[in-house]
Length: 423
Ligand code: ADP
Image 1: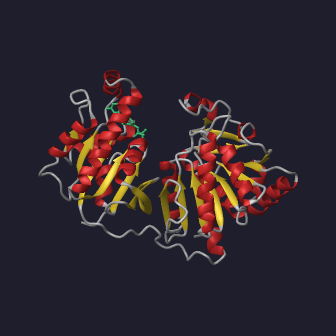
Image 2: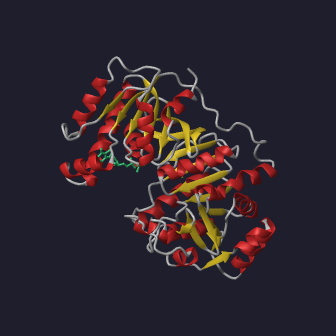
């Protein structure tokens, strides 16, 4: 293992995995902190996904440190703490406390921080994070229900979360390239800074930052800043020339889509797929319990399951969602009931021979993966940016699984996903 990573949420971990596979690293995502004697996957990079972003600080730090200890025992040569490209956190954490704890555990004294991902419109300039061309605190993120981001100045934001001090590697230095960035970070560390926000506006900047961090024990940031890391391992002779790191074994079996996302992109994708595949929509108003909804959906699949996908959806447009939430006792209760139904349906579909499955929705994916006892995902090729096919294994049968976070993917995502697989 060359790179060992701890990620603060589930679909964010997959995003990092995809970036590493693109860079030619064979990558495995582990679901939750591994037990001390869990086997080490045969991979160049392992990303441990922990749902720590909005968890209580102590739990988040404890889990992250346990994952780090496991990755160290597995022999990783460098470590990465992956968080969201919009720096989702509060003044209590959890980015600062986790980074502080990892710096202490690795005894490395310093880490850079770069959430930039220019392809997705996230850039950092003079320490300020922009999302979609506007300052983070004007991007809509200031209204986030759990982690409202009301300050775009990341030096200030991180300073409020850490016991250490935060410096800045500013745009002119980053423009000057890898060795200028490395020298600036060394100076900041010598001055006693334990963190530095590093500006980045282009992919070239991210690659230069990666190069500058070749000998750093820890790198913190979004998946963008991982872009430059595979090149370091390759230059050191530790990683073969970029080949196809995303080859998965073929798994034959029936196909299905489970959609629990109500995001606009997913609703469009369902509209597109409707013309090509049979769709069953859950009706929680008529059947307000998870077992009943699952039974009806699974009965509907009789005689329909095969190589061509069936689609089962909870997804609905905003007015229908509001009516369902009102009838079922609020958003949380409605969401939990439908996630439970989807997880039961997934289990039933596997029992009926489905081995190729797309799940739409971050929370929905979490519920499905937990129910199926999936422990690890080996990352394959991307269907659309940030959404790869994966080989899921754990307590049950191995299967090909694609977990799509709600807003990801082009309109033809669902049919395209299955067309990519061998017949
Ligand atoms: P996304 O990635 O788009 O945010 P998630 O799966 O994370 O999707 O979240 C969607 C939430 O909405 C889930 O809790 C899901 O159970 C819930 N949900 C899905 N369909 C409906 C619906 N028709 N009415 C109310 N809630 C729904």
